[in-house]
Image 1 (tube, rainbow, N blue to C red):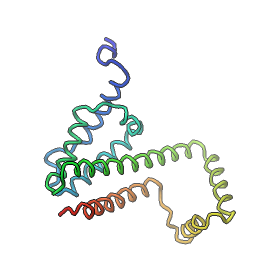
Image 2 (cartoon, rainbow, N blue to C red):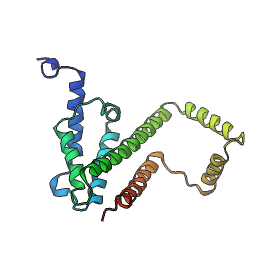
Image 3 (cartoon, rainbow, N blue to C red):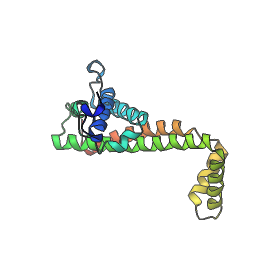
Image 4 (cartoon, helix red, strand yellow):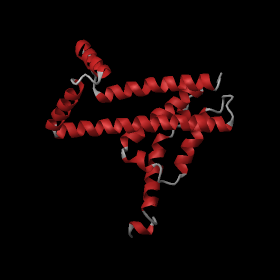
Length: 187
């Protein structure tokens, strides 16, 4: 039997693949945290990990039809907010805000991974890009970037890009949740 016997077109294949990814994002009931912050943070982390683990998924999410596991994922996102005083429109808004943050951060992580792969395959390209960047900075037109580079050289504060993105994700997620809590007066 051919694949076309089971699926009509490429969109169906993408939808099935997306639904398989969402299955891995779902939080088992026994692990679902009781507090809204812990619950949405866990969902956000699992979603980001799945997207980073499947780089093609970020761009194809817009094209795929919702399957049962994507529906369960959305259900869990709403369930995480069930104990709050948020109205349903507010819950959908908060869920969209969190999903946008997760997708954006995952896109940056995927881009960083691709740059690292490119750098390992072509170190000369990295050296050329660094030289170009240094030449631009040396023009004096970028005082903040110059100060940042000097600070990194002085303090040795540079860290691996993927480590930085993990820390940035957690810092941003905490700040976003603080802002959501304050903005919507969630108690």
